[in-house]
Image 1 (cartoon, chains in turn green, cyan):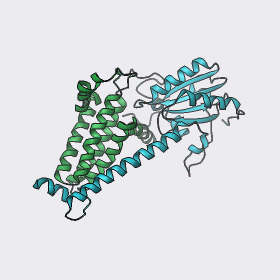
Image 2 (tube, helix red, strand yellow):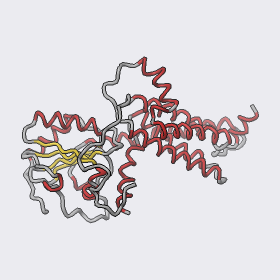
Image 3 (cartoon, helix red, strand yellow):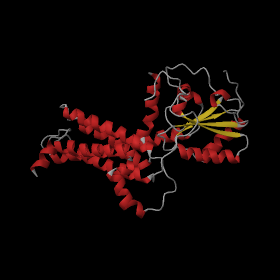
Image 4 (cartoon, one colour):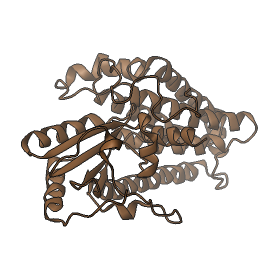
Length: 163
Length: 177
C-alpha cells in the first residue's frame, strides 16, 4: 500500500512510465468465464436461501479465489475456454491486459464472500442478495464487455488518496 | 425429491407451500433484474460516449472547480496548438488501450493536435481536480488549456473527430489559472 502522506506523484514507479505489462490474454476468455459465473449465480438465485444455494455460492466463491490467485485465465472457466472454446473461434483481433479482470475477480470474491458471511452469521437472505449483485456484474461483463469490478478500481484509489 | 422440495419451499420469497410458483417468481425477478441492468448500461454508455461540456459533470453541492483547465506544468509537456486530448488511464483499465489506439491514430493524421495519456495512479491530484471517476476519461482541451469537452468509456474515431471539429469552431476561452 502506498503511504497516504506522500505526494501524489510519489509512487513505486516514476510518473509517466507505463508499467511493463504482462502478456495479453484473449478478451473473450473473461467474458466466457463471466457467462459461466452468471449462470451459476442465476441458479443460486433460483434455489433461494436453502443450504443448496449457500453451497453453490461457495462454489462461485472458490472460482473467484482461483481468479484472484491465478488470474482469470487460471480459473476453471478460463481453462475450459482455452481447451474447448478458443480453438473454435477465430484468433483474437486484440489482446487484453490480464490485470483488470483479475482485480474484478477480487471484487466478485468480496461480494460473494459477504453473502456467505451473512449466511454464516444467521442471515440467510445475504445469499440471494450477494448472488443478485454479483449476477448483475457478471451478466454485464459477459453480455456487453463492461467490467464493473474494474470501474471500482479508480474509486478505491481516490478513497485511499483522500485519507 | 424431498431435498429439492424443502430447498424450494424455504425460498426467500415465501409464497406459501406452492414451491413451483416461488421458482417462477424468482425466475421472473432474475429476468427483470437483468433487463434493468441492460437498460441502465444502455443509457449510461450512450451518455458517456458523447463528448460533452465539462460543467454537467460537477457533482451537485460541490463548489465548482476554480481552475477549469490544464497547464503545461500539469502535463509536463506542450499543449497542441489546435487542441489536446488528455486521456486518464489506470492499471486495471480494460478499455484504455482501445482509446489510446484511436487517439494515437487520430493525432497522426491531424497536425497540431496532441494526445497525452496520464496514469491516474500517478496523478491523483488531477483526478480529483477534474472529477474523474472512471477510466478511460478523455478531456479535450482548447489550445490555451481550457477544457472544451470530456467523455469516458470506449471511443470511436468518428466521435473524437467530431469533438475536434467542434473545438475548431468554438471561440477560445481564457484559463483562470
